Image 1 (tube, rainbow, N blue to C red):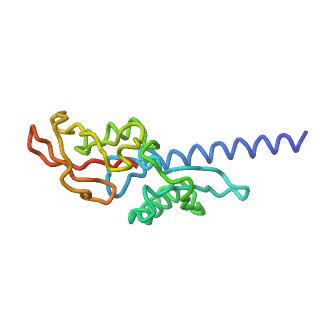
Image 2 (cartoon, rainbow, N blue to C red):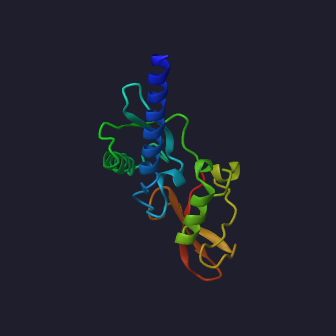
Length: 175
């Protein structure tokens, strides 16, 4: 009976720790697009309490050469340390590769509101092979748009122009 009570207490403590860790993680924003949390972006792949009680977090980069990964890991460590998890372990996981399909609907909404055209809800084969359909302008909503550059302000975005309002805008690449 005593072992069961101890196991239940350990499980409850682990659940509380996991909940507190997830709350801390939910505040961490993307260093390149500060309106998105890492949860919105879909790079948080796993959050668990290890056997030794440490919080373990797996993150997947938006692409293998993403320069923001080090900043993301540091920001996660800082948020977790601030929540009392100084011994948290952050691990970069490359398989499976990140896809824009992992972005949340809320993240897509935040991107558009911020002035960045979000990727389609499901990564299309056409986009992967360079045959992209026109995007809606995040400023005026027009679909009379054209790509003017493969890279925007960061490597994960392309530069587009609206033919209606004549404004340039970044578009998050569909991966």
